[in-house]
Structure formats: C-alpha cells, structure tokens
Length: 200
Ligand SMILES: N[C@@H](CCC(=O)N[C@@H](CS)C(=O)NCC(=O)O)C(=O)O
Image (cartoon, rainbow, N blue to C red; front, side, top):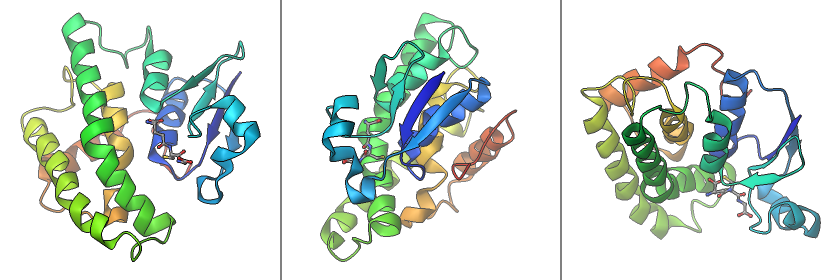
C-alpha cells in the first residue's frame, strides 16, 4: 500500500493523487498542514528532510519526494509515460518547465492570496510574479493551439503536471478567459476516465 503525505489543497499533492486514482492504485492519505508548519516538525523532517509535501511512501517503505518524480515513478509501464525516447524527453521538458517557469508564480500567488492570507504582506512580489505567470500561460496556449495534449497527442504525466495548478490559476486571480486552447485542454483532461477534482 502506498502512503501519500499531503496538504490536500496543494496542486503538487494533487498530481500523484490524481495519477494513483487513474491507475486504480490503493493508497492511504496523511494530512500535513503546510499553513501551520507541520512540514517542519522533527517527525516530518525524518520523512522529507526538505520539509515539503507531497512525500510518497512506497509499499516497501522507501520515500519518494518531488511531485514530478512521483509521477514518473508511478507512470512507468503505463500509458501515462510516453513510449518513445523523444516523447519521454518532451514530457520531462514540460515537467521542468512546470517547476521552473509556471508553478513558482501561479501556485505561489494562489497560496498567498487564497490560503495564506498574505496579499498585503507580499503585494510587491505579487505584482512582480503576475506577468511571469502569464508568460508561462502564453507558452502553453501557443503550444496547445495546434495540439490536443502537451506530448504526442495523448494524455500523459506532462498534462497532469501542468493541469494541477493551471486549472486553479483563477484562485490566484489569473484570468484564463482569453486562453481558449488552454481552456479546451482543461476540459479534455476533466473528461478523462477516472478523473477526480482537486477537492477529492
Ligand atoms: N518541488 C516540490 C515542491 C513542493 C512544495 O513546494 N510543497 C509545498 C506545498 S505545495 C510545501 O510543502 N510547503 C511547505 C513548506 O515549504 O514548509 C514538488 O514538486 O513536490
């Protein structure tokens, strides 16, 4: 049995939860509340010395950290990991893009505005991060204008990695109304078999 240590509203924690649900893998859930620093307790630091969720305990007790590493591990030998060498590299390309150019801006604003009540404290950062978040959305929009999914025209872990925070970007006050291709892609993902919402 897998154990997922998670803060349920987190998009990073939603990624492995969504994939495990698609794959019908049974797992236990342990809530670690980031808003009250439960990620920094001595007990949790034994699980992830980096003090962050998600952390995934495998059936043999090994811990995997980093949400996109979990996706890669869980997707092995399934349709969620592209088969060709080039498409696997393209999946990684999007997953690194997500962690470096997308999540730091889109997820961070959502957390400050919606969950951590830090709109005033981080007003300058919010203003600086907003165009960077839109720049990431522009890159996705341009790519998706001529495609159904991010890699190889089929639903993969690259889509799960980018879906996690894009579909809740409005909670960080990003306006997706002009992003037609992204909105169609979000709908396409939501119509996949065994899709679950982030609130599940
Ligand atoms: N790169 C990591 C990011 C993990 C991360 O930033 N987790 C946040 C919640 S989304 C967290 O645990 N924050 C609490 C803390 O840093 O103490 C991943 O993809 O798993």
